[in-house]
Image (cartoon, rainbow, N blue to C red; front, side, top):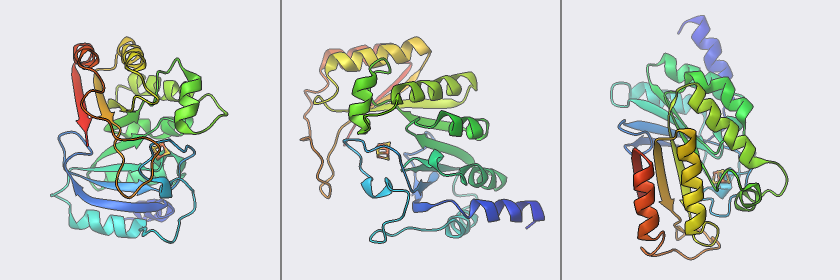
Length: 250
Ligand code: SF4
């Protein structure tokens, strides 16, 4: 390993790896990828599937990995994997993310990012190195109060932060998808349409609607919903609005 790569690796080793999915075909569109989960998230979303990844400190009851293991895995899978996706938690919370991305790129992988868009400045630091981004849009960006309610944080203009991240992705011409996890208890059919129209007006072309699902092992506040939500008129509007619309259930 060259000296430059060695010092890059030394810095990237500080990344707090909460877990790894070694192989997936669904986390980066059209590519086989590994997913690296990063520990820590400033939000507490009402539907979070990874609440143990919210604290910045590891909960020792859960397995976690380290960056050396990730790099070892990636070396063994060179030629089999196309991409590495950083997910979480919220990966942009980690100061070692830019170095980890750099190292993965030096190994020849595409780099994807799953983000909630809560840290525009941190996203700015890495955006030019990203090949694809999946950004959560949790509520209409014009509805700051609803945003606060969904992310479980009363203080702060979270919708404005996400809006800045969206601008950044558009300005930098990064390939990206907006995705929304939806349940009628917090996103009515009308709110969904408002959200979708706002995104369309910003020039978003890829949108995925993920209908809320409660995994068996978690106690989440809402019941699973049936096929009546969202209603078919809403789905028809979403299909019409976006060049690429995907409905994800389960
Ligand atoms: S932003 Fe993601 S990781 Fe953070 S609390 Fe919300 S759903 Fe969980």
